[in-house]
Length: 382
Image (cartoon, rainbow, N blue to C red; front, side, top):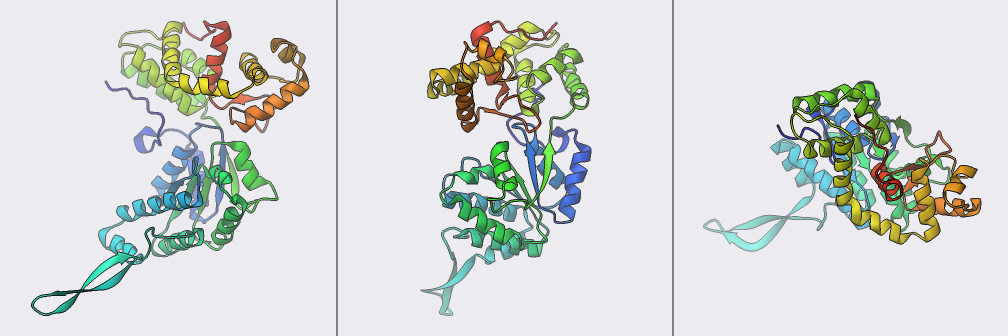
């Protein structure tokens, strides 16, 4: 049997499970043309949730990913690719009409024999279909006039890294607010940056979209499904074992799927999953991530590394408390504060909106840091 656990890509259809009430809520906003912004932690399944909600409605979706976008031209080019994918999905006649909007006839000096009729060819108006953000959003609006459309901008916080980001966002907001019939959905994996865009009054997108919080799927919903998948491949495992892994990874469904996939690969039919199986699976994950981990440690000062390691060892709890500073080696509160600011700036850790503690964006990195001090880890198992 092939490995049934999928991670690192959008899952829809039969591969998607859970969150039925949340899907219905999002679909309700789409039907009314309400713009929404989806907040949630990294790898919690935001993108798959949104894509699946749109898919079940049977509406075309213009999905554009702005992750690590570097220039305004690249931003426009990514959107163009999304538009072209939409056109390819449309019926032939509609696709022909859509492409006709972006081409013009050209009369050449060649003549067709024997009637001596000038030959007409088609060429694009632009090397790219659009040449500015305004052109791009106008084209999205025109596409909507032919067929209902949902625009989904993923990793939207990536636009903050562009030169003149505020001007770009202001132009987008000005255009989007006139597209009353198009529901725009914004999502991103860096909460503090998404919060900055949509919750701070100085930003053009301030309160421009209805916020929706996405938390982890309840283990009671995902656990039995994962258990059945392991059992279908002859692996022996208990719900308690899986639940301990789920909580160890903060309930991040993407990381949980990755760990389950690796557990599947390192085990065989008839085998009982245990601490040793988990340690082998973690070693496999860490081996592929090691260059990234090494680069992160190298980019930090010694004191920043001390704070990072201590956050892992204390699970990020009370970083200004006495216990934390003792584990860190009697480090001063001021040093902790400066180090935390740098770690947040590098998107290594974050502070959940309802907590004073800190979490790692990458739980596997946290576990690796713990292992550097206390290996073998205190791992769940039978």
